[in-house]
Length: 479
Image 1 (cartoon, rainbow, N blue to C red):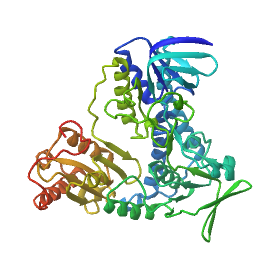
Image 2 (cartoon, helix red, strand yellow):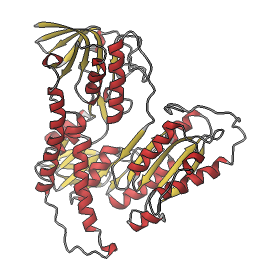
Image 3 (cartoon, rainbow, N blue to C red):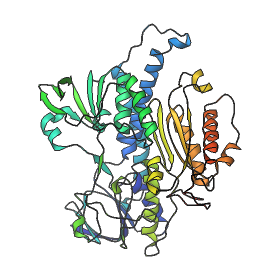
């Protein structure tokens, strides 16, 4: 077993690890990235990119099947499952190739394959071949799907995770989807629109990521029209009969080819030997860290990406990796860095987005805030393209009129979300946003209607609000 001494060791070569590597290099060339699996990020291999490829195919099929209201009659639509999955795999492999090429372009002495485990706070053992002694360490090991052991025991290989979906050679006839979060919704709707018999089982009455109660109700109403749902499914019984999965809830029993477990993700921390480090950890074994520095306690160890269980999104992982890598490189001169305004998007139809501070976070702050809203049911451009469903809710600070955040289900949410998160990050007021140009006819005119509603709401200041500017949590620059 050989020994390597480095300034910075980074455990994991995913989005966060790659970003940490580039940031650490600005301070030292003695950097080592350790990867336990294959190169290529979760996003490229089994996440963002292949799921959007599947969704794109589903949108094409759905558009063809629902062209009649435009006066366009499509006699028949055939979904070729083999062709759909062939394109998904080929384009996915192309994206993965770009990532692999990037990592393999790094100097050989900066890369090491194997599973790293802490021996002590400065020492890592990588499989049975290498000891790495590091002055600073970045943990960027990502996460994995959360699958109850009893499900695996009951269903065997008939239980799949989203990783398995993108290895399919063709589409199955039927799939039960367990979960009601973003991954579950995106995949369930896409498969349903591609002709797969799907039923989604949600443990609670909540569906999707939105926290605003008005939008939660709207989300459930919309998806109930398009997708077979079974919410409040707390007592689901699963068993396998031959090559079928049997899902029983009360007196209802359904049979499927497989069950897709999409019930959240778990940080990859259990095999790291963190108990040997003395680092502060929460009850789930995840290290406690400062999100503005990535630093765990006051130690020389940093954490970034999905493994920290904070914001499991690619752009957040990249930011966290940059922050953690930079501070690991410059340690002990650790500097807090301003996080960008929050932004999250679900690529369902209609799309879902959260920009800036959520309704739940603002409510938890205990400070009153103004709410504006707009429905897209009668919005001009949305009706023209027959995407007229959903709503947008906008939030602002009473004393200053500063825009704080928004939640939405509706058309072009991915684009409106960017505009709104930029406004949060700049610290725009509602008046400044309304002073911006709005073309006609566009979906953004619906945003203008919502902002006007928010401006009206700001006029009715609750008596308990003091006439001074208050800062919201994590609003980014200017906030």
